[in-house]
Image (tube, rainbow over all chains, first blue to last red; front, side):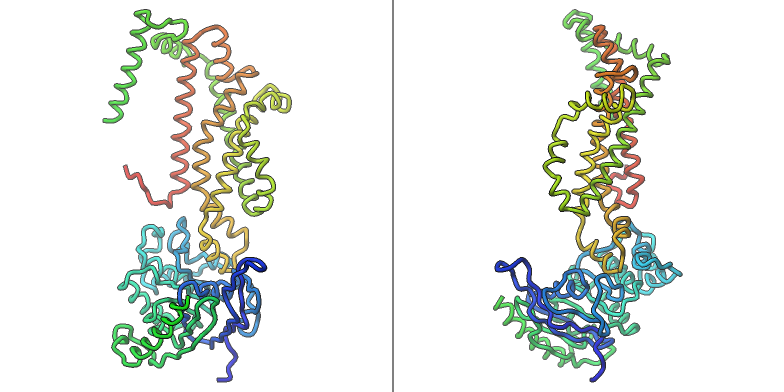
Length: 256
Length: 251
C-alpha cells in the first residue's frame, strides 16, 4: 500500500463565474488511483463529476489545487491522458480508420498498421472505410475505444461513455471494455450514473456529494477478476453493494 | 415528367406574350416579343463581339467570387480565433455588410480603374462579408467536445484548425458560396453598367439607351443561363468536396 499513486488529484476546487456571484462546483476533491486501478465516480446529476474529468484533462483550469500523473503536474493536452466523452466525438468527415489514426497524426506519428489491428480488436475491422454516419451507436463507441487505445494513454478518463446506448449494446461494450482493460491494465477513472455499471466494472466506487461535488464515501468492490457481466448480477456481494450505494446516493439526490 | 410540365409552362408564357404583342395588347417598344428576342439571340450566338463580352463578364464574376471568398473565409477564421477582435469590429463589419456596396462603385472606379479591376473589386466586396460572417458563425457552431477530444490528443492549434474547424465549417462556407454567385454577378453587372467598355452589363446599358428592348431581354436570358450554370457547378463542387456526407438525394 505504499506504492506511488498513478493519478493524484489534490485539493481541487472549482468556481464558475466571478466574485460574489460565483458558483462552487467542486469542493476540495482529493483522490488517488493506483497503477492499473479501475475507479468509478457516481453521484447525483450536476454534482460536477464530469467537470472533474475536464479539470484533470486540463480542459478547465481549477480555481485551487492540481492533478498529478506519476507525481508530475498534468499539462493540458498531455496525450498520456486519454479522454472518452459522453457524446460522439468521431470526426464525421473521416472514416473509422482515419479517426483511429487521428491521435497518431496529432503528434506527428505514422501508423504502422496498428490502427487497423485495433479496429479488428474491438470487432469493427470490417468497417475501417465506413464514415461515422454509416455506423450504429455501438459501433461508433467501439471505434472511439480503438481511437483511445491508438493514443497509447496511461490513464483513461471516461465520462459516461455508454450512457446513450440501449441496454443490450451497453452490456456488450462493457464486456469489451473489461476485456481490453484486463489485457492492458490501464488506470481508469470512469464517471457514470449507472450503479450496476459502476460495480461491474470497477475496483473502487467513489460516491460524490450533491453540489459542490466532493468525495463523500468510498466503496471497494469485493468481486473477483476476471468478471463475467452476465452472471455478476446474481452475486450476493453485488446485490449488497448495490443496495448500500443506492441508499447513499438517494440521500444526495434528495439533498440536491 | 416535372421537366415536361415546366417546359409547358414556359411555352405557354411565351405564346401569350407573343400573342399579346401581335394583337397589339402590349406595345413592342416597351415589351418586345419572344420571336424578336430569339432572333437577336440567334444572331448573337454567332457574333464574336457578343462572346468577348460574355467571357469578360464571366471572368470578372469568377475572379470576384474567388477573391471575395478566399479573403472572407480567411477573415472569418482569424476572427473566430480572436473573438475579442470580432466584438471590437462588429459594428463596423455590420455597417459595411448592410451598406449597399453598389454605392462604392464610383470609389472602386477611382481606385482600380475603368477596366476589369473595378468590377472584380465590386463583386468581391459583396461576396467578402457573406463569407466572413458565415465562416465565423460556422466555427462558433462547432460541437465543443469535438474540439476538446482532439485537444486531449495533444494536437496543436493548426492541426485542430485543419482537421476539425475547417471541415466542420464547410457546410456554412458552401451555404455562403451559393448566395455569393448571385451577389458576384450583381457586382460585376452593375460595375459594367456604370462605366467600362466590355461586358454584358455594358451591352445592356447601351441597348437600353437605344431602346432596343429585344436585346435587353436577350441579355437577361443569357445572364439567367449563366447564373444557373454557375449554381449547378457550385452544387457539383460542394458534393465533391463534402463527399463524406450522408447522401440525402439518391436520385
